[in-house]
Image 1 (cartoon, rainbow, N blue to C red):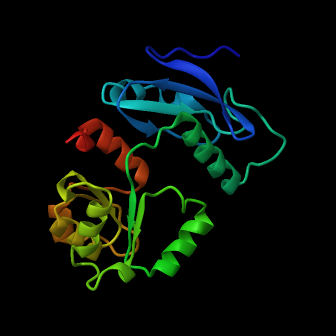
Image 2: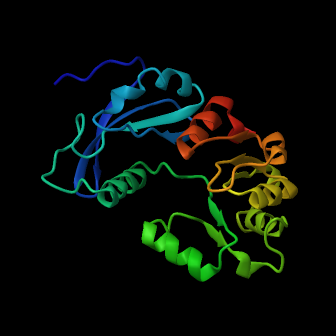
Image 3: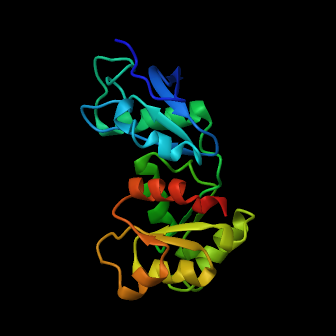
Length: 215
């Protein structure tokens, strides 16, 4: 099957663990990983790619069993497909920005949840309520996270899911985006956040289009 054409897009195959994945890629800058749904493949992003490419490195893989990637006999559960994506990120060396978890949970709880999700080694720092005397909405956790990563808070992006967290991030001086979890954003959170978005896919799209990470 011939690959459809999108101007500027290059194609290659990457050995992601034991899976040979097809990747469509273009642009330069910070990485944006665009994951298609079911039953689709990389070409679903054909109208989005030209908008992101001037500002970011756009990486559009075909997931396991879709498009031009290999079609194994099994492994189509969420956990395996998530591991495929992590293996792809490692192979592409795409995740180069320092990242931290800043949570009101205890360290034991945070580490357990991150371990169960298989992402406990994806962060440069993990800050919990055990690390400070004042938790959220105090800015102390965010200030400490910025210090651990060697950054000024004003150059950091905070993605928060709670109103106390939004207050903490803003008080520290961080660029703040809210993706609400259970409790909806207050009017104050809506007014002071850079954006209130429904999910992390929307966060990525906004950041790359507005170049918020560039400064």
